[in-house]
Every structure is written in C-alpha cells, then in structure tokens.
Length: 474
Image (cartoon, rainbow, N blue to C red; front, side, top):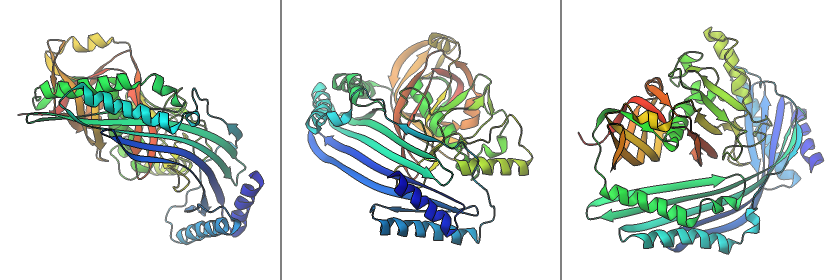
C-alpha cells in the first residue's frame, strides 16, 4: 500500500503541483439509535476512500474517491490539480504552507476495551437499558432517546515532502435526550459522553448513573422557579466553563475564523481577559476526546497556550493559516516574538470526504488556587450554573448558552433550582469579568459542527464572573 500511495503523490508533482498530500481511510463503525424502547437506527459497516489535496502556487484543490481502482484515483488527482491550477490564476495572496518536520510513524490506539469485541446486541441492550430505567423512574418523564456510535478509523497520511503516518483512532460516543411534563410545565435534558480509549467508558458511565442524573435534572426543572432577568454574578461549573470556552472563545481563536473578521483579529497580542485567565487547547491530553498523536496534515499534536494571564498569544492553526498569520501580522505591524505563528496541529477532517480545516481539540481554562467554596462566599444573590443544553457564538463576540441545571446563590449558599435559564453577552467582557478561578478541573466530551463534525473535549475549573446576562423573567 505504501508504494501505491507514494506513486499517487509523485504523479501529482509531475502534473505541476507544488505540494500534494492524501489521506487513505478505512472506517469500521456502528451507529445505533433507540427512542422510547424502539430501535430506530442500527447500522454496522465499513467504508473506505481517499482524499487528495493539491496545491499549485498557493491555491488548493481537493477531490475524493470511494473507488480505489487506479483509474478512479487518477481521476480524483486530476480533478484536484485542475481545481488548484484554475484557482492559482486569480489568487490575490500567495502563501506557502508553513514548514513542519517530516514524520514517519505508525500509531495504534491504546484501548481499554475494543468496541469491536462487544456484540451489537450488547451495545443495543446497554442503550435500551438507559431508556427503560429513565422512563420507569417517573410518571412525568415522557420521552427518551439514546444515540450511540463507535468508529475505528485507520488512516494513512502521505505527503510529497516525505511524511508517512499510519494512524489508528477510536471514538466511542453516546448522547441521551429526554423530556418531562407536569401539568403545563415542560422540561428537557441531555447527557453526552465519549472516550478515545474504547468501550470501557461504559463501566464509568453506567445506565444506572446516566438515568439517575437525567431523572434528577428533569424533575428539578419541573419543580424549579424561573430566574430573574438581568446582570448578576455567577459561578460556572466545569461543564459550563467548557462550553463557554469552546463556543465563545475557541472559535474566535481558530485562525481561519479570526482572519475572516472575528473580534479577536485586532486584539492579537493584547489583553482580552482577566489576568487570572490562561486558556489552552491541548491535543495531547490523556483520555481527552479531542486528543490524537498527529493531525490530518501530519503535524504532531501539542498543548497550545492561547491566552496567557489574560493576553492572547496564539491562534489555532493549520499549516496554511500559520503561514498566513505571519504575513498578515507583519502587514498589520503587530507581529511580535511573543505571538506564535507556528502550526499547532489543529488541521482536522471529518472523513476522507472532507478537506482538513482548523478545529479545536480539548479546550479549557486552566485552574488557579481558589477553592470552589470560596467562589460563593461574597455573592449575596446570583446563580450557580452546572450543566448546559446548547450554545452558540458569533464572530462579533456575542454568545448565548442555554442552561439545563442551575440554582440560585443566596448569601453565599446554593439555593433553589431554576429552569429556562440562559446566559449571554460579549465574550471579551465576560472573560474580563472573571474574578475567581478554583483549583479543580474537569472535562466533558462532545461533538462540534463547523461544516464538518469533530469530536472534541472542553472543560475547566469552577470560575466566578462578577456579572453576566441572565435570561429569565423581568
């Protein structure tokens, strides 16, 4: 196989390309979905294909083939070359790919329990058990849906520079969504988890644990009061810190979005957060759902410090945008030795059908030295935000996050639960408003959509913000 793939790359160079790389993938996957104890989806299968990327004088072309015969692959290569060649004739800014070390490696996933060794029947039984336990736990719980997926991805990456990486990645992922109703009060809740280490996650996230957490979230919402609307201090638990960091800041630090006009563009190298804040995006985190050894350009994963004591000192890059960043910042007159413009290993593609783009890995705020209890002490009235149900952000820095589990804080103590709460505001104002960061640290696993789906991790410690916009009753 190695010789055949190298010949494809060589053929691209002979056509006139300045750079060629390809990803040959074999994916074994199981996709399941159960709703109210009925199996809606049960797909088990294997797919193969190849994605070919060609650069010609700073312009890129990309094509794929699910047929692996020589004629189909040559056709895809020619299509990618013609696309890049045509684009190169009208491109305004010619930027070469940033340099990276040539790699040759074979990487096997380190699994606790290989999901291929678990029968489909057992997988269905486990997710069915969540539904059964949850629906039986309360007369008010009306609907429950569980989605499950495991993917075993074997990918060979080859580039015209000489990199050759044979890498295996494994993902096991589950999401539970349920609703409840009592009289005219409606509640919904979600629970999501995943692991790159295999099916052993089900020994931690057991059906009994999941159904109990979901039941409590739903029933508390049915009993809860609606929050007051306005600006209030708040303590954010790690799960909410994670989604805020990912959605509200992380996307603004993805270099492709930064240079598309994100609010961070004119603040690179400047203070954007409280001096307490350090933000990392780490592709090496042990057990992190966004961890891997090499990205989809063959660049080694790394732990990237994005915000250092409140100052933004790096973006997330693929090789193209690392080179572009250096050019752009030189033109802007803001390039400094402190600001990083080297590739960070964030090029990721959903599958061989997609060209790699910049994606987060495991994004989090680093812990400090406060205790969790100290964060509550000075709050006369505010909110404790434990778990989220969804979030979104815009390039102008505005964000909104829905909260599925939250409580009042009264005189430093956790009070009554609240429902239908959301937080919103401006990312930079919120980061500057952080005045306490605890010494704990936790992560959650999930998926991120950006035209493509990527498995990611996010998290942090408990943090306190002096004020944040709470959506609720007037």
